[in-house]
Image 1: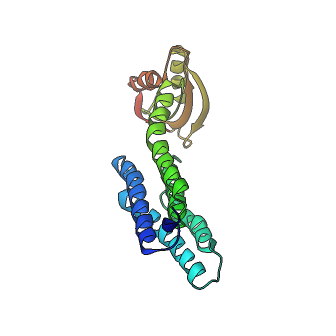
Image 2: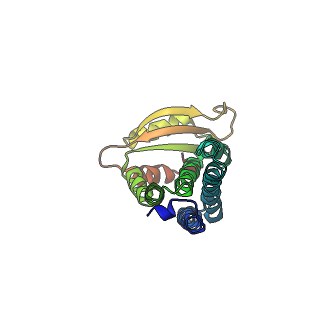
Image 3: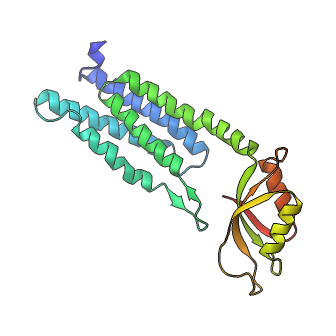
Amino acid sequence: MPEIRELTMTSIAVRIVLAIILGGAIGMERGLKNRPAGLRTYMLVTLGSCVVMITNQYIYQVFDTGDPVRMGAQVVSGIGFLGAGTIMVTGRNKIRGLTTAAGLWATATVGLAIGIGFYEVGIGAGVLVFLVLTVLHEWESYMRRSSRRVDLYIELSPGFTLREFLEHMREYKLETSGVEPEHDNLSDGRSTSFFVTLRGRREVRHDEIIALVRQMKEVEYLEEM
């Protein structure tokens, strides 16, 4: 259908509507999970990148000058600034927002493809981005729950030492590695806080490892990293 690939009022309307629908579908999924970028952010990203390519095509066709992909190249590099704003490092060096940043970048490319009239790739990529963020999220969660390894941040009650904690882990037949005290407070009477990686036996899974540690009365605080 060459008429919707040429720059006409019909093709412009089709491209903008498609960009808003695909961006909105992906953004709704992110918004329902309380991610930093949600429905409106994703819609604006796809709409903006789509308009950039429409404008680029218009300049190229009407004025018979310029590079038809130059403005799109600026979107691909510039979207990184928006994505970086969604990435946060918590006080315990836990990185959040990487998937949101990657989703914004991928959604921008969907808008670019639709904006230039490459509907097959734009729609296909939009559907794939949505599936990655939904279906693969469930699979990733299942794999995490099935894992025998867990990375934890732990705070112990005052007087209970890191050595005693490690001895308890050996009694539970849990392997410990990557032990990293948060600060030097092992002998000043304050609570001990540290990062540790625990690995269970074949029959001990992710949630069971966390439950074993959480049931210790000497553990004041626990957070999975």
